[in-house]
Image (cartoon, rainbow, N blue to C red):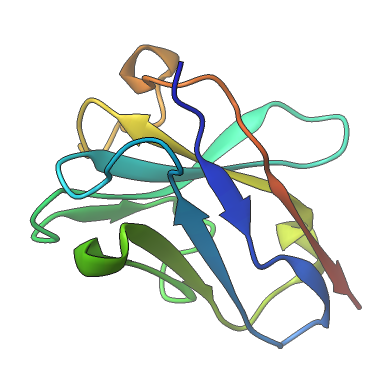
Length: 126
């Protein structure tokens, strides 16, 4: 079973920025739709963003629109999540997974191919 590895999290002050990376050690991502999700303490997993294989389609949760940008570098087999203007409510463990599609309802459970792999903790202080 493929599990993707997210990295790049850390502690940042409100208003700051971070860039998360998603890599697959035993598969390629260039032919896969990839999504970012997060889980805040005591809450369910929440869809954040997704990107299609040809980068022509992206979708974002309303909570992050205008602040987060998803991108991919197929040559490096990596998908990125650029997070700007971070807020304390963005504090969560962030995960990346492969998806079947990057439609507006990308975050439904049936659209997720992989189990939750290694996430990365993002903590935003006020």
